[in-house]
Image: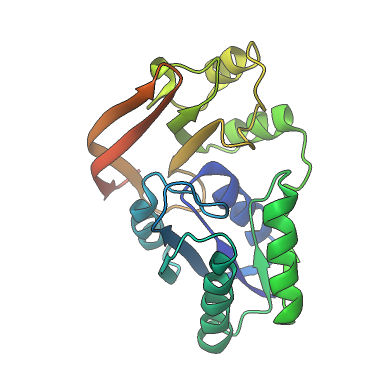
Length: 223
């Protein structure tokens, strides 16, 4: 089955695409750049880097701007999927939804309307086992945003590895960051033919537990 993968550049969406790519063809990637930083549907930090990820995967990318207005975002998704149906003949959509009924139900509804199959391979996965699987499957992802008590500036830019898992287990947040407690960026994984190398980045903090790791320059390099 030909699928479109909704990707944000973070661990959940790309790991979901990786899992499903063993059974189905990822015909295209779809990403949205929201005009609002508080988007209900879309991941914001470093979203432009999905262009490098798509280039590295050698998979076509549909990259669209979104209004960021709550329900209008759904029209943006629908518009992108219609393009994917026409251009790439997709039959389904894969997303990285973990536990957010808000996101998954809306994607499901749009897919039903367009007669597409909605696939969420990480839905209700055990978060600790999921992070362990990420590490085992050679995903190199870093923390690009924090927004929760228990997380500090020291986490930003750090890799999601066993040390990270041990530290985050001591906090009260969702281990996979499902509630937006932290955001991530995948630098390398089995889907990528080349890895992302960060050349320049900066950290911006709003308060002691809220901040962003902003990548200002990056490139693809051989593994």
